[in-house]
Image (cartoon, rainbow, N blue to C red):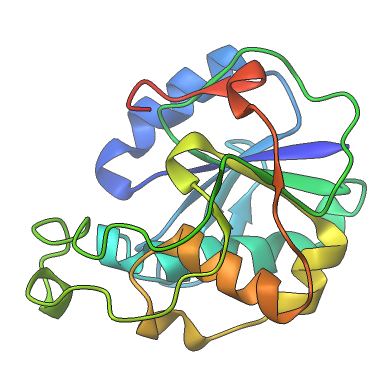
Amino acid sequence: MVLYLFITHRKNLDKSLERISKMMSSDYVVACGGSIRDNYDEDLRLINLNCNDGYAGLPEKVMKSFHFIVSDPRFEKYTHIAKLDDDMVISKKIENIDGDYIGNVHYGDGNRQWHIGRCGNFWDRIPYLGEFKPWCMGGFGYIVSRSSLEKICPNFNYLDHIYEDVYIGILMNKTGVTPKKINTREYFVSPDH
């Protein structure tokens, strides 16, 4: 069973909650940073996280969301989590899922300067100098299994990374999990991709 995790930010929270709750009736949560402490609002289906809520905080926000979900008994029934941006549209619910790490896979190096001008901190001045392993591109959405997340959570090395999707790919690679390519557009669509 798949839990749809929508990642948003405080400035867009009300709009995101309204849009997503109209689109989905169950099996979803929205995660947002900028909170004083981590908590879950069951009525809004909102995970409030004590983390950087900006673009530069995306690796932290996603990792803390994954950790919150795998640690909280309210989400035990979900075998997989679909990580989605807050503007994505669900075109078809995922019924059967096969794999631990699934999405639009990118092999080789990515754009090391994609983030420049988006962060508002030191990342705006330097290109990404880290490694690339095959990864599922975050802007298209991707799916990870609970069992693979349990191998990488908790993890606090996200501060050395700017690309959340590349970071997840690196962590999965370290645990021996390779990405499986699927056409995510069959299930969810991003207006930007």
